[in-house]
Length: 201
Image (cartoon, rainbow, N blue to C red; front, side):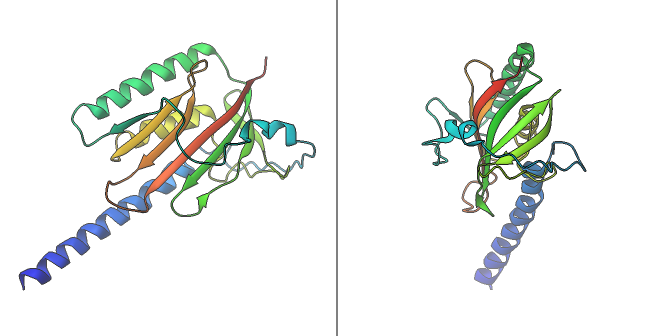
């Protein structure tokens, strides 16, 4: 009887964590969508040069200097919030509101996605293309602006167990984010990678 109760309790715990993960990842990968309701119908040929910064970047491995925060450890959550706030203030001080950049999102469910070239104007993603020059739907997950990536960081910092992050040295945007919702669960991770940031002056 005791063994049955233990199995039942473990099953209930697993279901609660699974429900938490299913609520969180649509939030992570779908929040701060670029321009709700707007579609990008343009088809762009000759974009191969725009994706040159992704050459050799097919691995989701973290870049050198990334920092991992175990948010189950006392003080780590506060340290992560302080790091996000510091870089967000520096990002805003840089004044980049019009820019192009490359973004790739990956998570445990669909797996690794392709790179997208995103065009951001006045802080909002207005157009996007994949590596074949096909237009990206700006309502689809993975079409964040840089401010959207900061939003993701701020939200997950209060909700999950592990965040690994690396910020760009010059512009201070999140260049790499890895999340782990619950330590010990195999399929609850997410990764965001940024390359080729180009401010438009």
